[in-house]
Structure formats: structure tokens, C-alpha cells
Length: 286
Image 1 (spheres, rainbow, N blue to C red):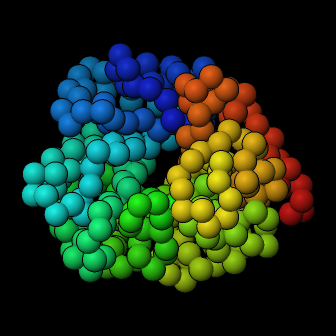
Image 2: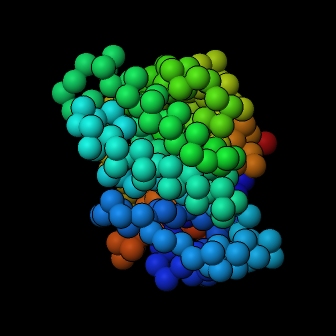
């Protein structure tokens, strides 16, 4: 398992790599542009080339890009959908250029509309983004079910993949905090095993591209997306150690999006705690 966290790319992609090294990451995740603005970031060719050199040298072995939260491919507003499609295509093209293992996307929000009216719009946006890029996978993230977010169940994610044409480049990112909040009891290894079995039946584990590792400030089924530091939330040591040691997750990037002790994102200690929890889980499964 490639344990790491979300880091800032401020100042260029080589700086994101350096921040990952400082934190002891095996993998890093970045936003492809400012999460507060639609304007795409112009990543310089020399920065991308240097980043790829650094990745080849190690110790970081995986890059994942998170599409910004402004994107809502389900929106009824044509202008929001247009901006969303442009931003998603930008993320996938950067993924191509930088050698990313995937672009993570929140599928969208119903915003009071029937689900059946939203799903075709999302599928159209996915197909358009894939057509604008060459190889980078697109990973749909399961959601906590807050305020009409789409993708809270494996069935919804599978439906979206089918509607997008079943392209092999479309996969899934599993977030353990979101699983718990949307009603999946993953607080121990036996509960998690059943959930992963369900994921395998509905989606196929070959579509699982990365993991988000976050504790939850809210309890099982609360349908709210509130991340807590490891292991200070409702998942706790038991749930997190089970998630981090699940054998079917071996080899995947496992990325922390926790607030961190100072509210600046995951630090070196949080990365270290994740490794300790994985070791605890492996020992318990032995």
C-alpha cells in the first residue's frame, strides 16, 4: 500500500513533490487548479518535466489529482456544466502529462432534481473529459450522501460507469469516512469484508484505483462529510486499521485528506499514524 496525503502544488509541481517527501509520503494527491476558482492553472512544461524526473528518482511512487469541488457535472445550469467539463478535461490532460494514476471526481449533486435527470449529464461530462485526454484514469469517488450528492452507493457508481460507456479508464476511489457516513458499517474487519465483497460484485475490484483514508467526525449513517484526524473519530483505531490492512487494497495509493493538527492538511505524524494502524491491522489479520 502506498500511504501518503494531499499536498499543495503552490509554486509548481516540484514543490508538491518536495512537500510529499517532507511528510514521508509514498503517494501524493494535489488539486489541478485553485479549488476556489474556475480558471485552470497553467502548469509550465519545465515544471512537469522536472516533476517526472523527481518521481522517477523516488521515494514517491504515485500521483493522484483531485478534481476541484466546484465541478458539478449533474447541474441543470448549462454554464456550470460547461465550466465543469473544461475543468475536468484540464485535470485529465495534466494527469496525462504528469503521469498520474488517476483523477478523482465527485460525480455531482442532484440539487433537488430527480436522479434520473442528473445521471445522463454526468455521463456526458465523463465521456467528454475522456475524449479530451489520452490515458489518465478517471476515478469516481463514493460520497457521504450529503445534500443530494450522487455516488453514495456502489450501484449508483456502477450505473454511472455503464452510462458513460463502460470505458476501462473509468474507475473508483473509495473513501472510508464517506462509507461510514453513508451507512456502510466499516468499523471492523468483518464489516469491511462484507462491504468490499459488495464493491467487488457491483463494480469489480479492477476498477478500484485509489483510497481516501480519513476518520469521521460524524457517526454511522449521518450523511455528512466531516473528516477527522486519525484515529480521533467514529472509525477509530479498529475501523482504520481494518481499512488500511484490507488485503484487496494492497498496492493502491492510500491518501489522507485529514485536517491535520494545525488545520493545514496531513502532516508527517498523521502519515506515520496511518502506517502504524496498517501494521496493527496486519497483525490482527495474521
